[in-house]
Amino acid sequence: MTRAHAGSTESWWRRPTDLGPTHAGPPPTLPHRLGYSRRLPSFDFASHILVLTTGETFTTNELVDVVQTALLDDRFRPGMDLLFDNRGSKERASSDDLRERAQLFAELRHHLSGRCAVVVDDQIHFDLAKMAANYGKLHGLEISVFWDLDEAIECLPRAS
Image 1 (cartoon, rainbow, N blue to C red):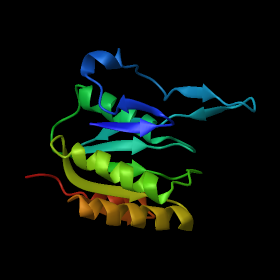
Image 2 (spheres, rainbow, N blue to C red):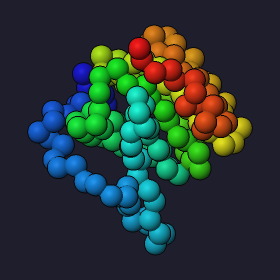
Image 3 (cartoon, rainbow, N blue to C red):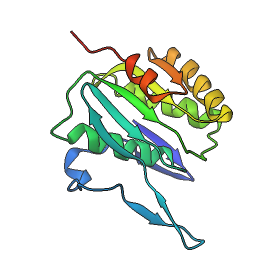
């Protein structure tokens, strides 16, 4: 599968050999043109959950890259639930961005459970996450949106 970006076509899925080594420690930062750095999306694991922390701003490609890296991590287990910690995000995704992200995560369904919880901290991101949940439903994903991290974790039951 490929998708077009600004006149070029690139594969959104990279083979494990294309990813290079994984790095432990805090999430990497990119220099911002105004002189400060921004955090890239990062991942961690909590029991049966893959936790993606989005940071203030991020692209779909950055999300795909971090998920691909997480899938290669020794702690990853097939069928894990997904939790997006989107608190603190300044990202204003378009409807097309949300539709594309839902489709991309649906294509990873054979790795993940298909259950996802999204945690937000403002109304606009709550509304965007609800829109993403509707797009996800079209692809067989179960996406729930929460204001509270603990409630989000509780909604993702342990597999028996």
